Structure formats: structure tokens, C-alpha cells
Amino acid sequence: MSSSIKIGRISGIKISVHPTWIIAFFFIAWTISSLFERSFDSWSPAQYWTGAAIGSFALFASVLVHELAHSLVAQRLGLPVEGITLFIFGGVSQIRGRYKRARDEFLVAFAGPLSSLILGALALLAWFAFRPGRGEGDPSLLLGIIFYLGFMNIVLGVFNLLPGFPLDGGRVLRSIVWGWTNSESKATRVAANVGNLVAYGLIGFGIYQFIDGNTFGGIWMVFIGLFLQSASRGERREERLRSSVGQVPLRAAVQRTPQIVNATDRVADVMSNVVSRGFQQVVPVIDDGVPIGFFTAADAERFPTIDWMNLSIGGVIRRQEPYAVQLADDAIEVLEALQARNIQYAMVLAGDTVVGVVGQQELESLIRLRQSGGGASVDQPPI
Ligand SMILES: [Zn+2]
Image 1 (spheres, rainbow, N blue to C red):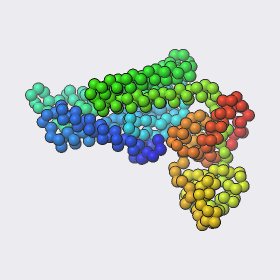
Image 2 (spheres, rainbow, N blue to C red):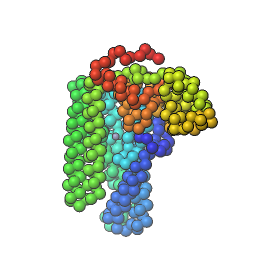
Image 3 (cartoon, rainbow, N blue to C red):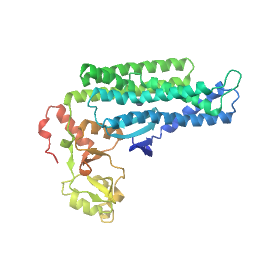
Image 4 (cartoon, helix red, strand yellow):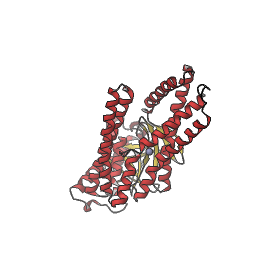
């Protein structure tokens, strides 16, 4: 997700937080505080609000554990993990590449809910071991939070096992159908259709809750239902595309880039030596050896030609940590990743070496060409 804020790295996996997470944090804290207020009479407002803030953070830490479980299992199975993002509906692990076997997909998908169920069970065990007996009054702040976490982690584990894409249960279902029928595309279709039903079910249940007086919970449920519905629609669209074109090798859409320029280079020089000669439309830019973005003629054309002598490349481009893909990647996957991040170009690497650039437009036309049956001729020789 673009515009996410990076907060750290665990086992090489980038952890970031999307700005929408803040909304979820306050919403959850508010829910917890009213729960504590109702359940524990003797707690002061300061106590239940402190408990709510800690509880909301701890709940997101639990979500992070859940995502780490997915990501670490994926890493173990040799799938590259790009990062984990926490956002308004919880968390998402960006796992790249496709599953080679149904068993691998099952293990990665199941690891998350399993970790939540284990965490929940441990917290509830602690609660039952240390909770105050009858007549002993309300539990301590810590114990109240532990109870809430135990309960929520069980909910998290069970909810995520609902068989709707992109919930884990949808992936678990897909992997089981895949292993059973040996057909990946049939598995995706089945899982996407079941997911759609689950999404309608959630929306219906949300409306019922809303009418029943649970305003926020109802609206929340409807939003999650709509989110699942659009995700399962995307999954089906991808499956239809994939079954019509199969694997599309990325290398056919890659523009080779013999030239990489420095941020300090003059715009006038790069325009006359690289871009205007027509052999390179998109030029990777590095600053101190680190890629910082791409330069195209459009960047220069925002300024009068007369200024090009005085402008540096670094001063006219949109600086953005370039998104890197591997030459061996699948074109459909790369296109989706670019669309999801709302970025135009990706740096193409072979191992650690920059070998070219690929853009959304080239990918779209390559895939369209494949769909219309003009496939084989567009394959370029290996770079
Ligand atoms: Zn999960």
C-alpha cells in the first residue's frame, strides 16, 4: 500500500502502518473503554481509558503476530515476503510469487489463524488462573486487558477462518479444493464464489445489527462485507485473465535501460544524450548509488527548455523509493502490484543488477496481445 509509514523490520520483513490504521485504533479503543466501563464498575474513567489505549495497541500487536505467522511460514517455504502492513481492517502480508503446491498455500494461510487461536487460548488460560473469585471485586487493569486480548484473539482466529477471500479461510478453502481437484483455476472459482456469499452474509448481518440498535458494529460489519466482496471480484477477474492467457513472462515487456543517470546530472544533458535520441524513454535515477526514482521527458517538460541547463535531474523527478521486480517474475502479477500501489514504473533486476524498466502501459498491452492470441512472437531473447 502506498503512503504507508515504515516502522521497522522483523526477520527482513518490512513492517508498515497505513494512515487509516489510526481510525481503527481510536474506534477499537473506544469500544474497549465502553466494554470495561460496563463490565468493571469499580474502575475509574482514567483506568478504563488507559486499559482501552493499551488494549488497542496490544490488539494490533496480536494482528502483527498473526501476519508474522503467515510471513515467516511463507519465507520458510521459499516465497519472498515484501512486507506487512497494518491498516483499518487489520493487517495484510504482501507475499510475492505463486504457490507451487496446494500444501504450501494451506500452510501459509492456516498459520495466521492458528497463531491467533494459540495466543487467545494462552491469554484466556491466564485469565482463568488469576481472575478474582466471587466477591473479590473487579480484576486488575492488567488482567482486564488480558481477558480482552484472549477473547479478541479467539474472535480474530475464528473470523479469519470464514471461507471468504481475502480472509485466510478463503485461501484455506482454495488450497483444499486445489489439492483435491488438482485444478488451481477451479479452486479459485469455487473460493471466490463462496467468498462472495460470505460477503453478502456479512453485509446482511451488519444491516440486521444496525436495525437492532448496534449502530457502529453494524456499519463496521457492512464495510468489511463490501471490502471482501470487492476483493473476491478482483480474485475472479484475475483468475479469468490468467486462465485466458496463462503465465506471461515479464521479460517481453521490459525496456532495456543501458543508461542510468545521477541525480546531480543536468536535465539538458540527459534530454539530449539519452531521451531525445529515442532509445530510452524511462531513465532510472540514482543518488549516491541508491535508486531514487525515474526520469522521463514529461518531468523535464514541466519546465521551460531554457531552464534545463540549470536544473538537475534530482530536482525535477518525483522522488519515490523505486519498486523493484525480478526479470523472472510474472507479468500479470507485476501489473497488479503496480496498480495496487498506484505507481507507473518498476525497476527490473536480474539478481542485484538493474537491467531495465517496466511500465503499466507496456504490461497492459503485452497482456492484451496475449489475450488476443498474438502470443509467441513478442518474447524477447533473454537480457
Ligand atoms: Zn491472516
